Length: 407
Length: 188
Image 1: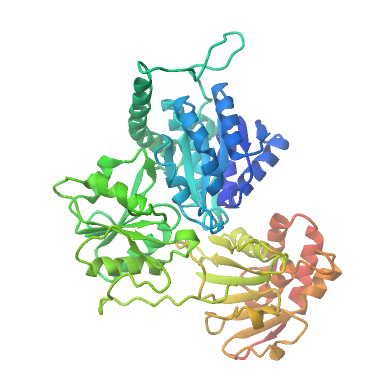
Image 2 (image 1 turned 180 degrees about the horizontal axis):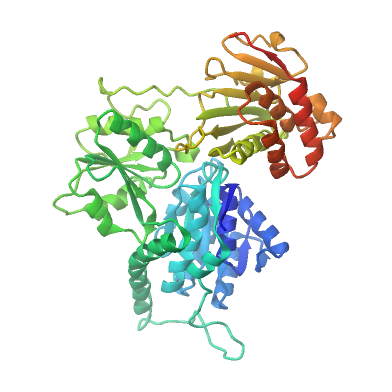
């Protein structure tokens, strides 16, 4: 029987890696991820998880160890955050080119300096173009389940995947979690079957020199398999529902069908946006939510379908690309570009460095969206002393005074 | 939904208090959330943790700091002077404070209900933490349960077994003693 436990997002991720029967785990500790690999090292030491836990001196080496393990045919897992993910960057490319279905949990943390351990998706989105699949979890349940869902697809397309989880508001939040039956997970996710593995009896060379006559085709195959992964994520998400009781999709709509004004969000802050949409509906405003779960492959067709014909779309980004805009907003705009029914897309940057993104924050965004005529690339919400726009007299929001209790 | 805020100092166990309280309500079948507001952790620095308990049969939807809690737990009375923990507390809310003083001595406005317990003395007597840095979380939770009745003592003791497996017996005793010794002042 599945068990229901009260666990943090970090511990849920460790359970996800355990249920997926990860065979090699290599990691370097970094706040706020450390609890994941702490628990995995305990589970490995106690024998509850039959895996090899490899301690290393850096995140670069952690990914290198995963590359080696995966090439040898093992299911490999690691977890990191912020600066750690940045240090892994070179080896992230390697995992793609070598076509190794490694899965990684990244607990999103703001980049230093200023030195911050708080939530901010700029770290994971800096890895947008390396060729890893990317899923964004909203709940503790998803922090566990997305690891299993990701392996299911990764091992079909031979591409690695990362699961993003927001620092503290998910990683350190304890809430009820259904820990699936191991047998059911085994049915959903059979053992990893590599096409080739490292075998001393059959020596081969890997990662060798490729000249102009082959490299382009290798990269085309990466592109082609990432495209395939779009449909496979849908299929595997459906199957997750059949076998493990909860269907997952690359996008989630909430009160979306008849919505004129759509808020787009990803990750844990979406819970608050969803609550704001409920409130707005009670006020008679036709608001809806589109949650982006799969960021790579980006579900372009479904996004066109879900957002086409709306009056206005606001994208909330807990990240920013200085010199342009929030990254989700960029991607949504590019998916809609040139479509005859494309709605105007307004970019809002929120919650940088863990600034509390509240239900009221989503209300502030909606208030601004309703009164603003021309879409802007980046409107900042919650920067001290910076108003985002004129207030509409018939749409009252509670002013957010900074609460000086914390420290 | 009941929202709680816990104020303590690094090393007193505020974060574990939040998780233990949530676990007690979870064991009673309620949907819960427990969440710490970490700074850069330092012993002695102010720490805040939050807990949400849904109404029976209900779910929880939001993920944000608790600005207007129903009740407060204060693990160190000196925070009352320096950290303004009362900010946002809803009228009629309980303020459960670790202090040797009686509730009337704290000068908390009569809109709130005040409970005091000498959790430091109880924790020291049971060898919880060190004599200089006692871990007072389980004691203050016993006092909180007596004051508010939000969870039962039975569920709290079971939650302590889950969340505080080291010195579980001593922690259970500390919670039970605080439950008996807490001074309640209802002046709403």
